[in-house]
Image 1 (tube, one colour):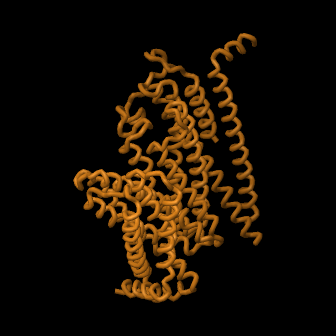
Image 2 (cartoon, chains in turn green, cyan, purple):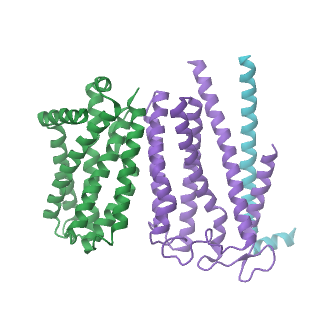
Image 3 (tube, rainbow over the protein chains, first blue to last red):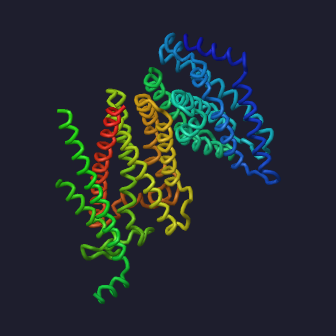
Length: 219
Length: 50
Length: 232
C-alpha cells in the first residue's frame, strides 16, 4: 500500500510543522468572525445561514488544499516522488491526505457554525450527514486534481480559486439545495435525486482525475 | 425618395434590418480579406521551404 | 469559395426574414410568423440568440476534441486549433449572455435574475475564463498545451449538465424550464414551418460562419507560432 505510506509521510511532516493545520484553523476563525461582524445586529435567516456555511467551507478549502502539490514543487521533491511511485499511487496518496484534511476542516466548521449561528438548525440529520460526507468527498477530489494542475503553473495562489470554483460550482449548487431542504426536514426518499447526482459527481470526478493525472505528472 | 423616407419612418423595423445587413456585409468582407491575406502568406511559406 | 457566397446569402436572408417578417395571430402568407403564447413580439430573438448559444457549445466541444488530439500526438498545431476554438467559444458565450440579458430586460423586467439558464451560462463564462487564466500563467508551450488540455477535458465534463440538463429540470423564467407549460419553442413544434425554416437556416449560417472564422484563426495562430520559432 504505497499510497498509504505516501499519506503517512505527508501526515507526519504536517504534524511536525503544523503549517496547514494552523493556517486552516486561523482561516476558519477569521472567516466566521468576518461574517459575524459584517452581519452585525441583523438576523440571518435559516436558508441564508445554510448558504453561508458552504461559502466558509469553499474558501477554507481554497486556502489549504493546494498544499499537497505546491509544497512538493517548492521544496523540490517532485522529481523524487516521480521516481519512487507510479502516478496513480501518488494521486491516491495525495487524495487520501486531502480527504482527511477536508474532513477535519469540515467537522470543525460544522461545530463552530452551529454554535455561533442560531439559525443553522438541521431537521433531517440523516440527509445532512449524507450530504456532508458526499460533499466533503467531492470537494477533496476536485481540489486535488486542480492542485496538481496549478502546481506546474506560475501565480499559483490566485490561479487556484479561479480554476477550482467553476469545477466545484455544480457541486456547491447541489450542496446548498440539499442543505436547504434538510433544514426543512425533508425525508431522505424525497431528496434521493439530488443525492444520486452528488454521488455521480464524485464518481465522475474521481475517474477523470485518475485518467488525466498521468498527463500532468510526467514532464 | 420622399415616399421611401416616410415609409421607413413609419415602419422603423426596416431601418434596423438595413443597419444589421450593413454590419454583416462589413464583417463578411473583413473575414474575406483575412482569408486572402493568410492564403498569400501560406503560399509564400511553401515556396520559401522549397 | 462557393460556400462563402452561400454563407453570405444565407445570413442575409436570415437577417431580412428574422427582423422584418411580421408576427401575426393567424399566419396566412408565407412571410407571416405565428404568435407563440408567452413570447409575443420578442420571439424573433430566437433566430439570433439560440444560434450563438449553440455555437458556444460547439466551439467548446471542438476545443476539447483538439485538446484530446494534442494529448495523443503532441502536435502543437492541434493546440493552436484548440486555442482558436476556445477564443471563438468565449466570444459567442459573451454574445449569448449579452443578447439574453437584453431580451430579459424587455421580457422579465431585469437584465439579470439568476434564472437557472442565466446561472449556467455564467458558470460557462467562469469555467472558460479560468482556462484563459491558466494559459497565460504557463510559459513553456508544451506544458501550457498539456495543462490546458487536461483542464479543458475536466471542464467539458460539466458543460452538458450546465447547458442541457440543469435549465430544463429547475424552475425558472427562461422558455423550456421546469415550470413552463410548453417544452420551449425549439423542442416543441410550436413554430410555424416557415419560421422553423428561418431558424434552421440561421443555425446553419452561424455554423458555417463559425467554421470559417475557426479555420482563419487557427491558420493565423499556427503560422505565427512557426514564424516566431524561426526567429528565435
